[in-house]
Length: 581
Image 1 (cartoon, helix red, strand yellow):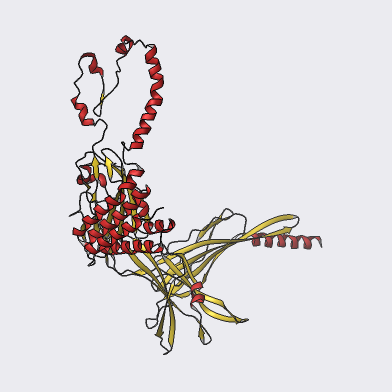
Image 2: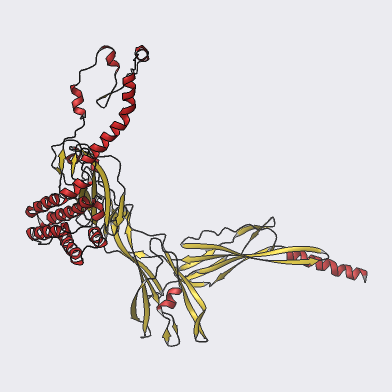
């Protein structure tokens, strides 16, 4: 008995040892598929302690995706020896875009220190039936075949799916959309799409239902060349067997399709260099510009807040600001910062603000603000211009820099004085500073102590009298007269310029009367302010009507009579002036 028992134990040990050795194999499903249909390839490793991750070989004409991993463990106890063995499955998807016979070569991987090789597998990919519509078709539609870098273009992603049928009825659009995998839609949003229906007669003469899901977005091309979207991929788990369970239709089996979108030839062209204006900042589209300024009655060197609105159909969010510091007409009479302006986008409008300062008292207006842009529809450069803004500039009561040139040139020790921007600096020679001694008398000390409060009272008085610039009270007093003058000047202007001039003057009127920036009253801001102040409803409605007509005259290029628009705006201001807030 002892030899027999020993033999049985030995054989059991050998069988267990062999069974415990790691193995690797490949399974493919299905082995026959159609173009763009995903074939599932699984690499399974059993009975191992350690195993490397397999590398799927490249197969010409095929795209490989995935590499998901699932794992299980089991523990055995033989002759008091406890051992844990693992099984792991790596899942890949193989998609061929052309029909043919494709071979998956042996896959090598290291298992428990040994190199294992799987057997090769073959997949047959069939062409679609040319007489049948494909189950899944994806295309990107552009309204133009030639676009330019920086141009905003509306694009549509159209996903056409054949409606699966259960018995005599088709699945609903919602059910079919739930079977569309859309993890890689690129620039297109993952929101609920629009829906179109299409009926196509099949080979059997029966009309087949197709759903076309439409997702829209605005695209801004960032590089020249053929338009392509290699990062977009749409999948479909198309049902091959449906069962009804308690009035609910479930998918028991399906085929998995993966498709990249097609797009008809669309060329992206660079913005041309020929004819490019010197102060072109990169705007592509079609734009109009409007400018407001407040205050408009200042001294030389006082700040003027310039509000610039740009309207258009281009990419408003990324719209570059106008290069004011490069405009010689503006910099000839105003000091303009060189820093780029930060803008605020809202709808089809972007607003910029900049502080400029007049440098002489002879200027009578802020010149038109120019905004060059490239019109991709006409394929040429154009310049949008605002209407000029009338201003009143007075001489500053402070010593102007040019007057400092009248001082005698220092000689001798006085030549140690520094000149910075035309101003004389302090003495910096240490020897001279040590030689200088000053005796301070009792009277001078008292005067020095009393000087600060006296100087403070003097500055308050000057500020109250408005010597340093227009005070809020002065702005309110002159608001109506200034606005009336600007509106009356619009009667001789073309309708588009007259509308912009009147709207700017009305916004400046509210700004001067309330002491706020004119940008607060651009667009709907004026009407909102009147309603907030409990102004009469007819007055607010009258403002809204006049401003709408100004906007139509400015941007629609209509046949609005400027003289009539001037009369209505003046009556509107007179009624507003009678209201006390």
